Amino acid sequence: MPTITPCLWFESGLDEAVPFYLSVFEGSRVLDESRYGEGAPLPAGSLLMATMELLGRPYQMLNGGPHHTFNDAVSFSISCANQAEVDYYWDALLADGGQPVQCGWLKDRFGVSWQVVPTRLGELLGSPDPAASQRCMTAMLAMVKLDIAALERAAAGS
Image (cartoon, rainbow, N blue to C red; front, side, top):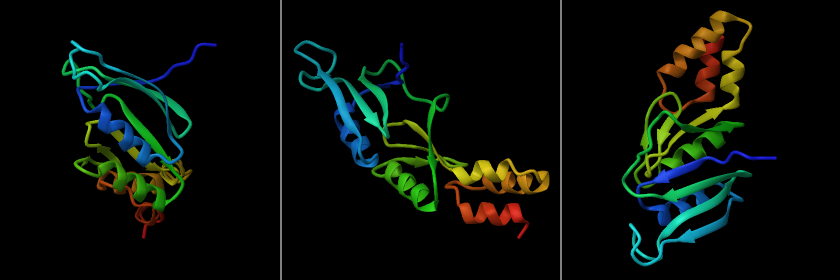
């Protein structure tokens, strides 16, 4: 059966990105890699492509040069069970030059967009009480990093 694997086009810096992502996502590993040879667009020996497994899913990463850049049209969403997980991934992905955005979104130092989202958010937004859901949505829209306790307080009306 065919599979679908996301491929991320890096302008450069894949040699730095691979160890960065391996350090952020515990248990991740490189499945395959290839390197540029002499006369290539990037220095010989630098990574051309790496296939990695992050949290059990494969991703290809291409060191393709300055032809394409990342944008928010594609992001990766990390479903977090609790605030400790939200805090961990938020801080780890912002390390060394990432930028917080809004509503749980951030860009890591390579420009990749991430959503760091507690599973509790979906539960609160899906509340059978429309007023509680709306209060939660209003609170979330005012946040940068998502705070589960504050979302719960907003949904409860306190």
